[in-house]
Length: 162
Ligand SMILES: [Zn+2]
Image 1 (cartoon, rainbow, N blue to C red):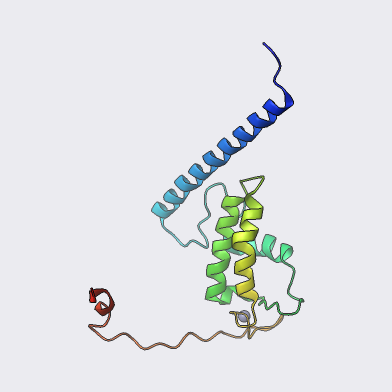
Image 2: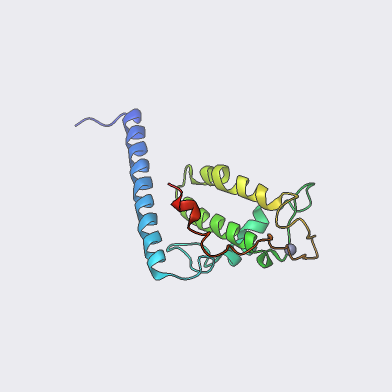
């Protein structure tokens, strides 16, 4: 029996890495289904194998330390971020995706940053975003969008056009 060449070893490691990534995705899928079946608040119900137990700990112990941009021009942040429903929803989505993608050791974080973190944090920090009226030491409750309750009979009208 001959020894494998370095190229063969590299190819085998790549195949192994891909197989591990596929297994991780299947585990995440199963864990997601189990979490869904268990119900509960997604901001406080951690996916199995999570590093942080909830979004609040993730934001305080990881996010605010890594994304220390609050003094940059055009970046709006609120120390009472948990008072902003939109921020809780967005940061919960970021936390849960971070927990899942951090397990993809080679490309998970770059995917998370590119497709989730940078686009969503730009939305949060934007001058027209949920933190627009807040400062580094004061919170201003963002107003809800105005709406008029849909009259009876109108709710199905759009779907009954065909
Ligand atoms: Zn605020």
